[in-house]
Figure 1 (tube, helix red, strand yellow):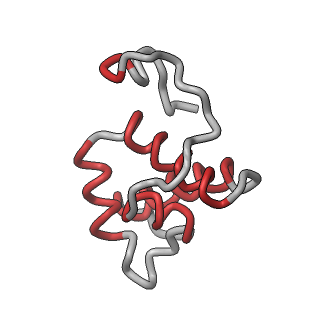
Figure 2 (figure 1 turned 90 degrees about the horizontal axis):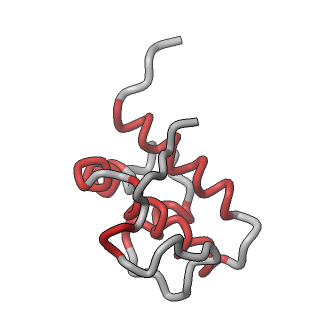
Figure 3 (figure 1 turned 135 degrees about the vertical axis):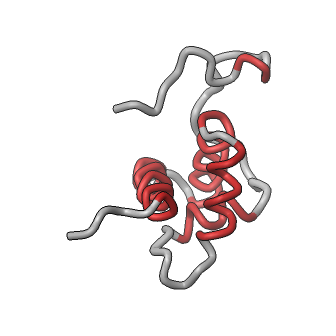
Length: 96
């Protein structure tokens, strides 16, 4: 088995986020995925996923694809940890 490319790793991570939000109504799920990616991913990571994700062979979950391509049409089901957007994600980590 070959090592994953950085694009494939981003797709895998985005798909894991989509799996978490799949139990929510679709528009809330898209908003939750979008919020998570914006809060915890670097601009370079987001740009790479936006460029690679629409590729038909990328394997990107359709909810995650919508989350990176479209502005959310609903509120995220996840409550913000802070009201100050500059502090959003402070102290949090995607490390698992």
